[in-house]
Image (cartoon, rainbow, N blue to C red):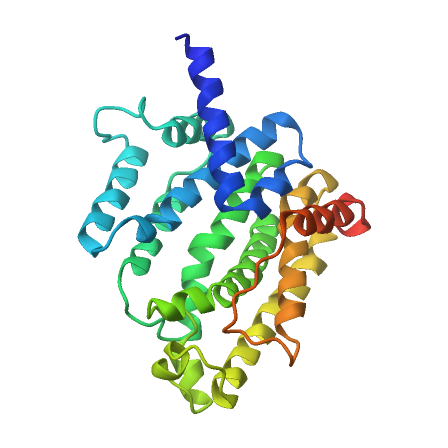
Length: 287
């Protein structure tokens, strides 16, 4: 098989992986030029691989080994090359083509080691650090595909990532609680008279709800800042931040008093596409 055919297959694999496990990310790339879209899908596919390691292992050690493979790959150590891994092959191509820095990708891997264990997220500062090196880093890397890096873009990416990361913590709450994993900061729960076991029970209490409402408020604050900063960046960059349209929708829904945060909620793909399409035609994202 020719190198071109192999490359095309790798790109298709990444697109399918993102479409399956990160439909918001996948759908948002539909509003970008093809070259940018392929590059973004390679980054998002890498994120899917790293963030889902916990789903593939029953003990931390095998998960650590999977993450170490990716760290070695980025550092050039490798394990017999990346020919058999289409995500790694596509990511390396994107890194080379767009001169992406390796350090944020390595830090993203390091942060996801937290996922492998059942230690609770201790504080709001710890959660913000985790999100900054994961969701915010992804926005920053994605932005480099569209425009040259700058402090202003990184500032936008940080707040966008914090808003998205907090929304993701809240969306995943029913799933995480069922497997006794806590991303809602323990310190925040304790401030409101709640704790780990209240969350793990999967039943809403006034104390847990108060802590969750405060977390929603933090997410909304970062989202407002991100939308304000979005107006000051080049128009060609704004579609990269289209996932914020879904973040806004999620945070609005979860802030309603009649929504139980411990009951799983799935947004249909049609609703996601409709929300992103409408947002793409707005002044916020279209320039």
